Length: 239
Image 1: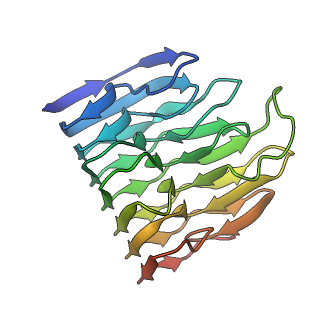
Image 2: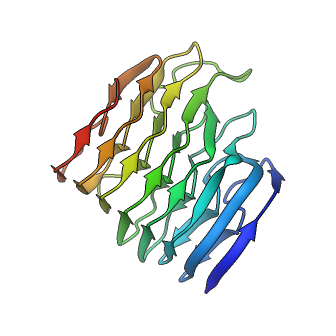
């Protein structure tokens, strides 16, 4: 159990993966009431503002503040989440009643950026994201390493992406943050809730503005992936 911890000034910049202000890898761990108030965390990806990645773990009542920035180093890399970078390996994981106010920004050479959870991969049994709110801006920007096509990347308000064989439930989540591509090279997708997922998206609302050059822009989800049910969701943001 990890609980009741406040980080006032995070200072992490590494060309590595699986990094979080609290813990890099949380396996069979209960994480409750963690707050990150300021500073910055920059890595090569698969990292989160609080937890690098989860495996069979629960994150509840976790928050980040506006003075905190989460992102990738100049070379870019893999996925970044404001709260959790990735859910991986076997086991049920959940992110509940957590709020990101931090700025999440990645270079276009990265895979994805999301306000709450960067990505879901490597055969988790199931993942639940419930009652979470993203208030922070999530953006993609160009860098000196851009060369080629970057249409697989994304910026989203809640969850980056989930490979189709994994069951994901995104329930009662809200995005207020601006989702943008701030660079001159076309991004893959910009969406208020998620890039793509298999499972359920229910009771979710996007209020955030979706702006910038992208192959796909959407208020809720950019790809309607197989075995996906979308129920009682609404987009109130400009797309």
